[in-house]
Length: 140
Image 1 (cartoon, rainbow, N blue to C red):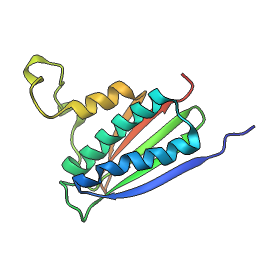
Image 2: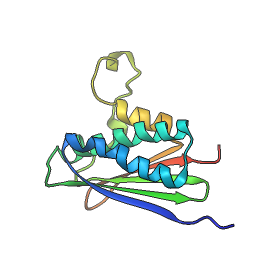
Image 3: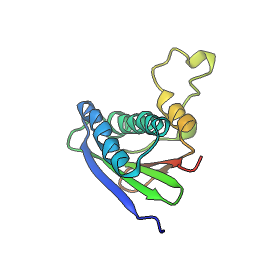
């Protein structure tokens, strides 16, 4: 039996009130792919953080800018791609939220959570904005 290519896409206007659309998107994905509860919640937290970062930091909550979501079911993997229209950032410059001096800071936890919960996280700056790729291994 060959794996059927499954792909989902969504576009979200950059307003913090639209972060709730992440759950709707993931529920559609889950209906087709049947993730276990742990996988679903790892994706929910990671994707919510990535979309929040794209809306608030990348697109500066400008509702004329969009966040594009794409999900691909690949052999053994689920790949979530989040694209914004922002100027990007240097991921190495994000402070470690576990260091004592950063414990009370409000920023830096989203990337930490994504890296902790996903099997691989990639950041790429393109001409049109930042692309974040969240990889979840399905055969663990």
